[in-house]
Length: 315
Image 1 (tube, rainbow, N blue to C red):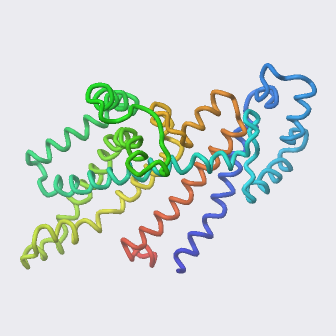
Image 2 (cartoon, one colour; image 1 turned 180 degrees about the vertical axis):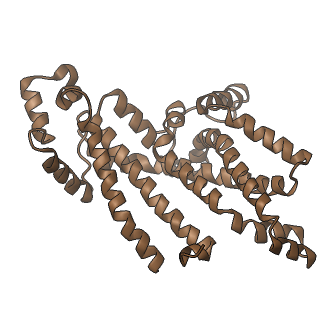
Image 3 (cartoon, rainbow, N blue to C red; image 1 turned 120 degrees about the vertical axis):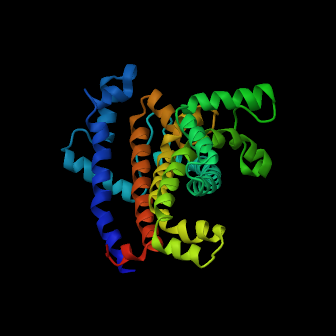
C-alpha cells in the first residue's frame, strides 16, 4: 500500500506537466490561433467570438488555469466544427478503440508468449530460426501495407470478411466481431514480433539461473520450468513493452481505423486534423497523454507484484 501511495504522489507533478505541454500545443501554433481555426470564415466578428471563447485576450497563466479547471471537471472544450463537447466526442468513440485494443492484445499475448517461450527453449534450433525470421520479416511491414494485404486476401479474394465498416455490439456478437477481425489482425501480426523477441531474450537469460538448474536436477517437468519458474521473472521488460503498445493504440491506431473505417478515437483525430479543429485535437492529445500516465502507473504496480524486491525498494 505504501508503494502505491508513493507512486500516486509522484504522479501529480507528471499530470500537471502533461496538462501544461498539451495546452501549449495550441498556443505554439504560428500566427493567430483564431485565424487558424476559422480559416476563410475569419471576420472581425467571428475572430472576436473565438478569441473571447478561448480567452486569447488574457495572459497565458490565466488561460491555462481556466482551461485546467475545465479539464478537471471533464470539460475539454467544444469543437468549432461540430460544436460537440470534446470529452463527449471522445467518450462516444472510445468503446470502438478499446474493443480494437482488447482483441488485438488478446491475439498478441496468445501468439507472443508461447512462441517466445518455445524460441528461448529451442534457442539456435530450427524452430527458433523460423520464428525469429518470421518476426523480423513482419516487423518490416508497415501497418497500411499489412491492412491492404489482408483486405485483398480475406475480402477481395476469399470474400469471408468485410473490408470496412463497423457494427455495434447490439447487432450481435459475431456481426460486431467480424468488423474487428482484419483491423486487429493487422496490428497483432506486427506487434507480437517485438514482444516475442523481448520475452525470448529475457527467458534465455533466466534459464541460465541456478534455481532453474536446481529445478532440472530435481526432475521438475520442462513445461513447469518454462511456464512457471522461468516465465514470471522474465516478464518485466515484456510488461513494459506491452503497456507501451496499449497506450500507443489509444490514439496511434489512426491508420488502421481510417483504412477499415472504424469510428474510433484515432479516426476522430484524423478528421480533426484535416478539418483544422485544433480544440478537438488538443483534447484528444491530452486524453492520450493521460492514458500513457495512467498505464505507466499501472505498470509500476504490476512490477511490484511480479518482483517483491521492487515493492520494498531493494536491489
